[in-house]
Image: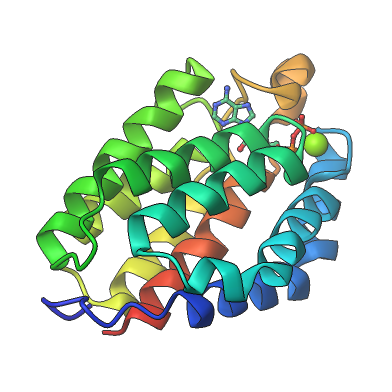
Length: 202
Ligand code: ADP
Ligand code: MG
């Protein structure tokens, strides 16, 4: 990622995220079928398609307002546990984001948005949730890693949820039977981290 992110293209980001989620919706659903109720891919595709439908309106807003509006939209359209959590992430990101952030302002806002997800979900690292990708992504971003490195960290972090036992969300109902499967929200988070990192540039 470059030091200055002044040229954030909201439309490009929305399109890239929606394309990524759509391309992996079946995979996300299969992951959720293994340890949840099998709706994660559909939920996420519905939400990101809704963002895509509003891409023009979002792109017309200053970045903080666009993030808050996108977060509100995700809460309304994704549903499940993940909708309010991803929505909280974007709303918190918008709250702390300057209109033209440099890298350190972006990283600081990202860190506070991850904390907002943890507060909303009453969850922490190590519980086999999206936080197990968001925290390492936060750290890679803060450490000045390149987009490719941040994406690799996020992929590895999602992979690292496989041996974990779920302690939050629907998968926690399975107890030990949640072990051996990747957390769906970690996978979707890794896909989105990769997309945003690559779109904002190395
Ligand atoms: P639901 O579980 O309601 O069907 P989804 O399938 O859309 O919702 O999303 C499930 C994902 O949400 C999980 O894989 C996990 O990553 C995330 N999740 C669930 N509960 C929490 C929580 N309390 N904190 C953080 N993430 C959570
Ligand atoms: Mg589900």
